[in-house]
Amino acid sequence: MDWNEGSRRSFLKGLGAAGALAVTAAHSEALPQPAFPAEAQAASPIQAKMAATRAERMKWWHEAKFGMFIHWGLYSVIGQHEWAKEVEGVPLAQYELLAKHFTPKPNAAREWARLAKRAGQKYMVMTTKHHEGFCHWDSKLTDYTSAKQGPGRDLVREFVDAARAEGLRVGFYYSLMDWHHPDGAACKTDEAARKRFVAYTHGLIRELLTNYGKIDVLWYDVDWPLSAAGWESERMNEMVFELQPGIIVNNRNGLEGDFSTPEQNVEAAPEGRAWESCMTLNDSWGFNRGDDSWKSPKTIVGNLANCARNGGNYLLNIGPKPDGSIPEETVSVLEAVGKWLETNGKAIYATDRGSFGWNSNANYTRRGNTLFIHQQYWPGKSPAAEWVPFFGPEAVIAIGGLQAKAKSARLLKTGQPVAFTQDEFALRLTGLPVVAPDQPATVIEVECDGNPVIDHDAKRPLWPRLKVGIS
Image (cartoon, rainbow, N blue to C red; front, side, top):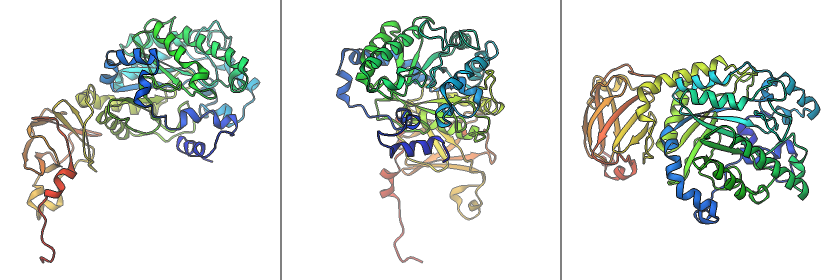
């Protein structure tokens, strides 16, 4: 079986509750996250408190739009995906040996932060503890840590310092599931084990949110094998907000949290609900030396625009090598995206959720009454222009169904004004260069007299049509 994210998700849907730990443990992170009814927001004091402060806490996050996810751990030494221990059935005693051979170079996180800055990303989220149970900080609750094993130092501290040095917001990923702790699976059926493991989990989270100054994001993952009640997630979040009043948290500890987390796809939450698509740059979260399925800059820019058009964020993952260095393909793609954002960031950052119809050649984002047309496939000179005057002798872009009236238009890349005409059916941008002015997408900024809704269906019944039978 090709164990990629798509096949894993499909397999888990049909598995049921009786599957082996190696597969069932993935249930929470792999399946779509549950919908939370509106009434759940007021179900407890902590939920009400979070709702009351959410707009202020999340303002920076909504403006940021683009973040870097980092999966890095003992699995990086194996170089065969972050689920290698479970997928390959590596005995725990053998897997523990990796901790002695995980010896990253000092301050590797500086390279990550500098790359994130060049890529136009505004925040970073690092795996402080993944499912393997290895802690990247100097915990007082376990010896299975970077400070007491191979690295001999606090890797979370290095990450925090690196992100702050580049002016980036700091996020901690934390896996609730733990393959290493003796109570990590026993807690499902043994109440004494549950109490011990919950105390351990809350203790680790307390350390993370106490020892590193202001933390901006707590990214829970995989609540197997307990429910929110079993994890005592209400009390967990109360502790989190006592320690970090300005933090934002996701929805993967069984509670609603501040934002939803679609994985490996762009899936907008209902309007009014914050959401963030997390996605890999190839097909693996952790470093996988055989995975060459790299997404192109065009794909990344398209995904970023898709998130922004629907009011969401894009958390794009990198998987550093065991020494902390970044694969060359990762650097190449992210630098290309960053170069595009230098010119076109206005069309992504601080944009608003829009109401747009589909377009096979372009995407859309908006900021207030400004429409940004992301032309992914540049039309060039149409051969049909020889017979159909509509297309013109130069490149023409037509947007059907725009409800607002256009006031001005220009190319973001060059600032060049764009001529246009508009009738009740379409906006036609004319006199455009035959060759695309920008790659991997050219953005045209159109100032409108109101919210630039694009609704093809509203206009379609009004289109003139010929009578049947005319030759």
